Image 1 (spheres, rainbow, N blue to C red):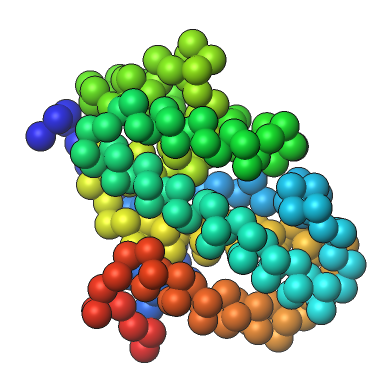
Image 2: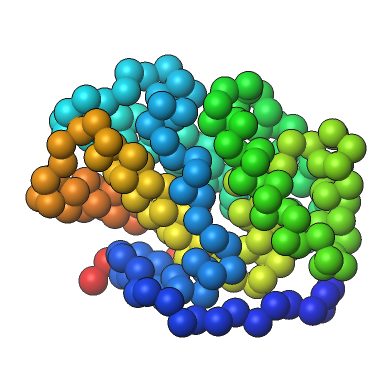
Length: 220
């Protein structure tokens, strides 16, 4: 064991989509939520898309986000960070962070990503994990950005939390945050929200199977 692993308290609200991720309460408490990363304006700028103004436009926007960012960049980056941290490859973790700089650029989304990642990193500073400390030093010295997805994968590894559950937690939380942000300008009925969640979960099962293959993954 590389360090003392924090004890997680499981007392929290039951999460949605439990068939995808199991009990996410410990994850929610340990990892927090990436809510600050999903305002529509920031995502629309990053995706070079128009801000959705209707339920149908929001559905198309969510699919674009899913295909171009969530499934293509964010979830694979979380998995890569988790694997590198688990293997003690601190230098490769820094290299992964630098690769993401080309994708996130200088957008407002990138600013939120760095802020969220560095906020969570501050919580981890006391831990004596070699890869973590090397990554922290790189962020402190301006050699790495502290992207939220890298930190999220690092957290999963440090707390010995299941990768599949962590990926599902991230996807569900960001999707919920987008929906909450959309209510400021898009009239969504309860049926609209339910339909969008069904779309999300149906695609998420496929994504998780590709990222973390397991014959045990199924939807009840």
